[in-house]
Image 1 (cartoon, rainbow, N blue to C red):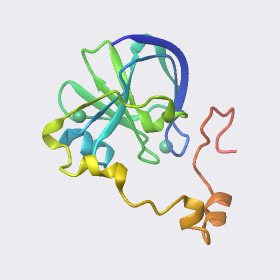
Image 2: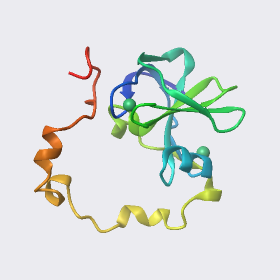
Image 3: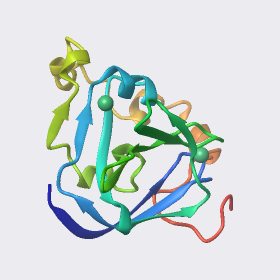
Length: 161
Ligand SMILES: [Zn+2]
Ligand SMILES: [Zn+2]
């Protein structure tokens, strides 16, 4: 695992918790293990490592749950977004890749937790596509956008506006 100097930010859906980092590890990954599935309420957790000395919470702090003695999971207590995977003795922590402001920049390089991987996981990429949100929810998309309570994908001086 190599350290990459960069500048990233991210946070939860409601904006109560925000973070920033000046470096990441070059090994973004997904984990299929049952504990990661539960922690994110999904088929797998997508995570990216960040050296501890390069990381800071810039607004609020997550609520914490110890899923085992060495592992702490962090999430927003207001909106529930999973944010943190922290193995106590590691030199780095992990944030959920989907909580980054620019997750597309960090594609996963490796996968863990094969024992709990969904048997149909490799089929997901070829599922029938119903199109974009604008196409599939055309009647509702204006109401969704004009009443959007999700924090934007960049830092804000004040939130909510
Ligand atoms: Zn939140
Ligand atoms: Zn896991």
